[in-house]
Image (cartoon, rainbow, N blue to C red; front, side, top):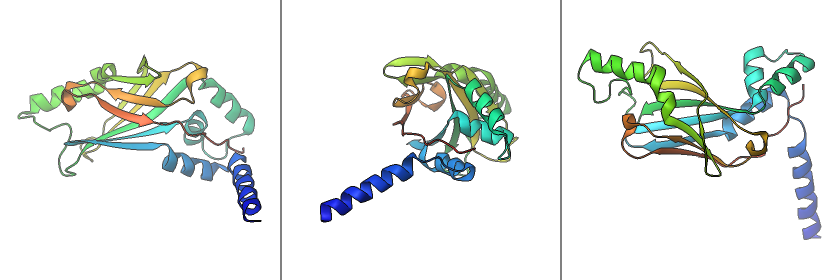
Length: 192
């Protein structure tokens, strides 16, 4: 009897998890299940994997037509997008001014993050090193000490659901590479 109840409970959980989620639930699910954080003293890295449907919902809003949603989601196939946030463990310190002694050095670091940092970011999937092909540094104009980037990688569809690692190889964060690991979770579908 007890094993039947466990079996039935397992089937119910499996059926519920396979159902389509509503838009708001999907957005919340992505934000809670597809975020990883890594501390590499004195820096803190946070990355959020943004599946295509999530990107479309954020761009177009929750009132998007099903046909538009499907078309825009299809256009994003073959790409993996992430939000990357970098801050200091000491929340009062700033990544841009860390170990700088002049405005010129701060400007040099700002230029690095604006243009060259992209070359130091890779996605590692099964040993394949995929360069960052989409990159945007969000200037905060010193309103926050956290630095935000939107990064994207062109990937074959066959590897989109495999474990992946964002790898940052930048002297700005020391001699060791920063690895942010994503053990791909089965991403639910969304009801439009």
